[in-house]
Length: 477
Image 1 (spheres, rainbow, N blue to C red):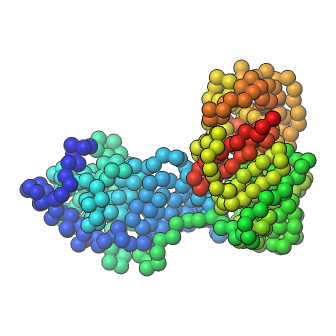
Image 2 (spheres, rainbow, N blue to C red):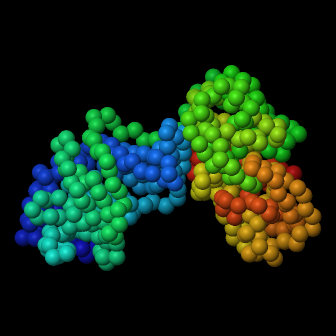
Image 3 (tube, rainbow, N blue to C red):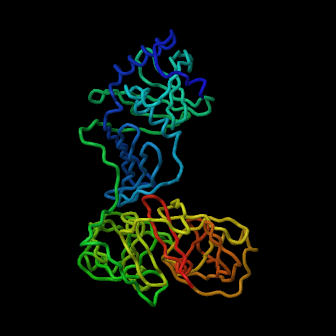
């Protein structure tokens, strides 16, 4: 790639001059697309239900939303990393790694390489001459910047529009078809990947408003954030809160992908139904989504939001579950042994600093179980210590010997947890043991199991979803 992208200026020789003329032609044909805010809409059907896919894009950034009625979720790319966005706009990184391939595609789709600042900012281009595709000749060049993969661009010399983008080895190809003029720009309405429809737009528009990245629920604090007392008789953090002026008990649960409320509370509030959702726990069922609020926790006030209605929630002693929307809005510290939660926490130095990844909007960390490495969800709503998914345990039955069992309940049903002891658990550079460990027969879904509230009681746990970090401060015994 370094050999191909040796150019830092254009016009130094004949090939450079040809490429310069081609780029001028592309600017004149397409317009300064890298400066535009484009809104694109597709109408699709999934499992017989109509949905709308809306994409906001500006330069390298895009926000893609899948919407069914009022409920939307999707993905956001900030030019470097890719994020999941839930129905309340909470934005969590899908990976801690940058996305150079996606950045390269966006650099070309937005025509960012035509920006006058591209080369000055370290961008590279190299002329790769003519190439034939299906009997037609195209002008080609390679483009990349320091943070993106190099990709080869095929330009139709008759229109000066991008027709194909390929990896340098030709292994994958994107094709741009069905161009229409939208305002002062030429935009493709169909994009194919390796010959299959990748994107089809029914409508595209260039809007004058500024591109706004997705964001979740922003709390307003009445004074400095205060400590919130949790139920001293519960292993999981349960505190008082209010929704729509009704005071209830709420579970502060990293294992929940958003916000939830009991069907009884939804009925009492007269909360309007805005969509449907399928929940998963120890079982699963289809339920409704309502809009309700405002939410008050301690001296923090959160705006109206979407809540998933759980028909079997109240039997566990609370009416609201505060999940990723709550944690994604502010730093949260949970001291399970002291039965206290603090909001507005800023991470400092800690003995155990862990990078979080997110699966289904639930935080996941790497944990050593004896000599085995596993990825476990950090789940403050699970009363267990270490609770493995049953299929993971059946693959590694030598992890622990089963010495007892107990009946457990959860959203969607009940199950049996098989319990034993493991001599050592490693998290970061910290080792602790022996530890109680179990596996629940119907536990499926996120990661290979859970680090539950009982395990976290050994620490003060500080969560910062924005920076994807978890700090654990061991409690003195």
